[in-house]
Image 1 (cartoon, helix red, strand yellow):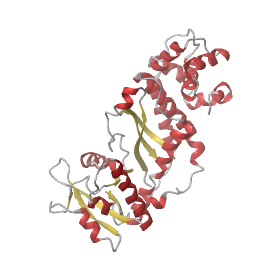
Image 2 (cartoon, one colour; image 1 turned 120 degrees about the horizontal axis):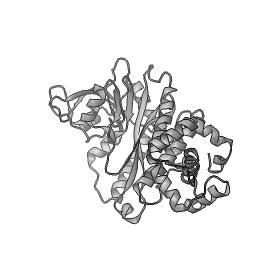
Image 3 (cartoon, one colour; image 1 turned 30 degrees about the horizontal axis):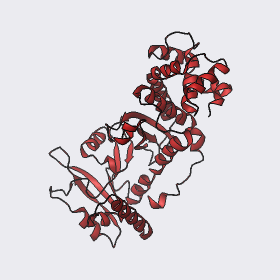
Image 4 (cartoon, helix red, strand yellow; image 1 turned 45 degrees about the vertical axis):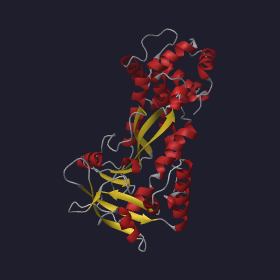
Amino acid sequence: MTRESLSNAEWLRTVDRFGGTELLEKEARELGAFERARKIKCAVDQLRLVLAYCWGTRGLRLTAAWAEAIGLASLSNVALLKRLRNSADWLERLVGRLVGAGSREAGVAAAKGRRVRLVDATSVAKAGRDARESGGRWRVHSVFDLASERFTAFDLTDESEGEVIDRADVVAGEIRVCDRAYLQPDRIAKVLGAGADIIVRAGWNNARWMIADGHRVDLVALLKKARGKGLIDQAIFIKGSAKKPMELRLVAIRKPKQACDLTIEKITRRARDMGRKLMPETLVAAEWVIIVTSLDRDEYPLSAISDLYRLRWRIEIAFKHLKSGVGLAGPPGDDPRSAKAHILCNLLLALLTEPLIAEHLGDSPRREAA
């Protein structure tokens, strides 16, 4: 969908997707996005104008000129920026509604009838030299529902808030699949306590590994010992702040030689570029995909855990659609309100176009390298 398409019948269908004219007008006034009709006739016209700016590439001045040329509104670029800032809460409401609509359409999920939810985050740079030099980022925390092929949760923060596995509400019975950044014992315990299961990628040194009697486990020694077999599937305990360690299941699969060589080459080059020396343990762990899970071994054998974790490629494709297809990038300007509105507009566009791409996705070409 392009800015030009907002001037034809597609816009009316888009309004229906957002909940209809009556609901949009009511919400815009409730949330302070639209107060009275002056230079813009109604809240729906304001939404049309804001989306045209955020989905386009022509800046505030040309967007205001476009609006006047088609008889949509007559206002300055400064006035348009003010409308954008005031629309952030309203746009967040629309994102939430589209996310909810997608989850209701999900039907029966994968993994033996259970819902599979992929948790990850992506980020874009903040505007301005000071922000760039200090590593300023806008972070989009996301949940992607595998069955419906749609995002089902978004949370927008800056770089001060990290990625956590329990940020999104837990759906009882779900299987939450995450990368290694989410190996957080205390937060995993909350997810399990809410009735879900987890599959989380692990690093060799980002948990306190234990056996049943509470003694520490040398994970790298376990990996070395299992090289011949190439597989590990056993009970493991990890220690958080609770007195009692949490029992999980350790699943490790040795990568094919080509994948091992590529991984080792990558981490060696990165360490060299950063002036760091690689630990021998890191090179051993690089040969393996290490996963912890709460799923029962009898119901979900090692091969099923591997297959479920490999499904993470789907959220990576969704993020690629956000950035390459939709055009999610660092928003212009350093005002937090307008930046938030800009990113939310891009999330709306992703949610509107997801159904168009989901049916064309098959197996990932990256599965073997996962």
